[in-house]
Length: 343
Image (tube, one colour):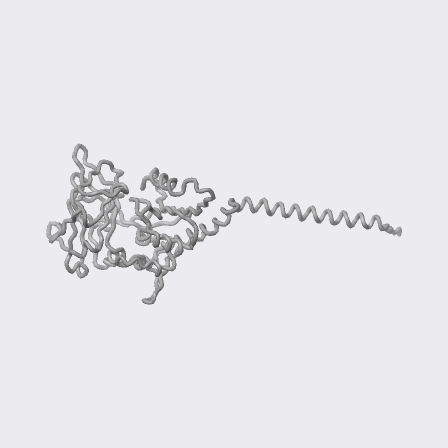
């Protein structure tokens, strides 16, 4: 058998070749990891820092019920603590979540309307009227800390809301902010389908079990969208009445007709006064009745029902018009898209 013996120079050459091969493999591995990382994580620099924050915040919103805690106790019904009777106890809410306490992957309309501005059939937050303390505490309770953010919730069915208006608001709020990340989550919500109602009768009645809504929000706020217009007639909302009783003709007894200085009415986001003309089916009417006005009704808290009536001429509130309650309502389930922008 022949044997081979390497000289010292040959041994050195083999060692150098081996080290070179190892170095090439290591460099190739690092390059591959870098490329894959850039593909999997489409953000870099400051945006790469923002993405986990945005992802965590929107996941919390749609997958968590939220939480409050104070000396009186604790619970997940934070919507009743956020603004209890106008006291603005924001700090008691440790976590804001929109998940319904009773249904999986379903958002709670009450929680959504507590924190977000209802634009008829879609929601946004923050808005120009959001106060500094509220916004600071909302940012804290959503885990967003020092970051700026904007949130929209829209139905997946684009026929249910004004897509152009929602897109325009997103552009106005986010615009050209430089490094911005957006994260989307999908869920669903159960909401009442209100059918068609004449504005010559009470628009809705709030039963005693739900008076906590009035107390927790310092009053009652509701929105009416998709008002049907009778052609060739003048269409106006002439006055608003509240009360706690109905007669046999479904008319409010001992009603209080509200004057312009004791409540707020908005048309398409703009504060206005009665009478309000409605000229387009896309007009959105929002009404805010503060608790001080409601307290003018003696012993309303012990009543069975609290009624609100819009007296409108030549108008009908039609599906998918949105109020809170209706005697001929049915439950409608629809899918939602929640988007958060963080910068």
